[in-house]
Length: 411
Image 1 (cartoon, helix red, strand yellow):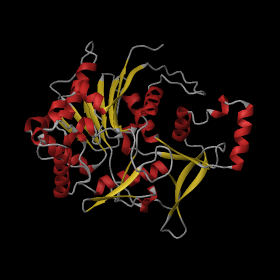
Image 2: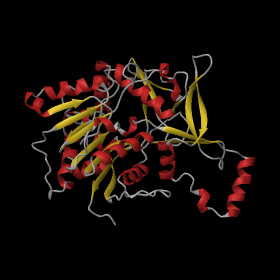
Image 3: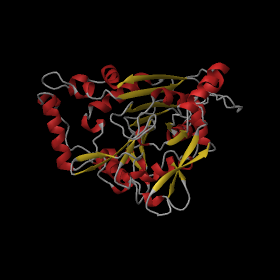
Image 4: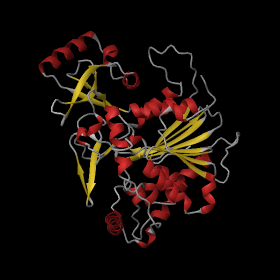
């Protein structure tokens, strides 16, 4: 199964794309959680970024011949010309480095797969794409359709992969899920605390009386996804690990010098992995995404970039609520937290108050820098320029790969 910026399925391979656009018209008379605001901002069928901006993600007509470029300057000029000519907001690494990026992923699957059970990779056929954006679903159909023999082996399911109702029965056969730049566009929530010792509160978005502006509303923790994410992250660990003397000192300090706290929670990731582990209990996972984002103006730990592009120039907003259907909203991925969520959704990691009888299996996981992943599984010489500069290895320092495969160990 592939889950990418455009989702797909193989082995059956499944790829899940999740991109769309949102308008502030979505916020009505009732407040909404931040994740619902972001989901509508990106994926609303009429106002969502990835729904109305059909050119948000591009497809390169030809493979870039890196060995014909002199070096970094020539490469950057080549990319700049492509962006200006096409008015595309984003070319994914899969496109820029095709076919070598995909080759590395295929190699990782072949080396990691458990061949004691049928792999069901019949010449890489049986390929489905679960794509939430109608416009990107069409791009996928057109791209695959360029090779006529691939058409009967491919289908696009235009739906939300995090919606359990769209999956049908549980699939007991092994499969691969590939999520390339999917995590960064999954909805997040925010929790807020007035000081270092104040309790965390959920953040909601509401429309002001003037009907034109939006503001935040704070409520006690009550949402299930938010609460579970806080527990998985162990945000309240100081309550149980600190001595009474330290707690008292911290309480006094926070009253004298109160410092508000904000933390972004990957509740969309939690929801998606919850569903995937339920419907695909024997899945293996490969995910790639940003490990950090530079020059983020929005406050809070793991805060997103909210960026719009016009006439070839990008502009970053200072408030996520400024998104009006013209901006991408993307987050950095905390790969340690991703691993924790993966183990929790598989049933292996239990929360403190979890009394369920669900018995999960331990998973083998590893996180690699993109350069390390490509050197291990790829063909780095194919993306090297004349002077030795290699954009795939040298320019993607803020991205990582996460691999997770099931085991039979339940102890």
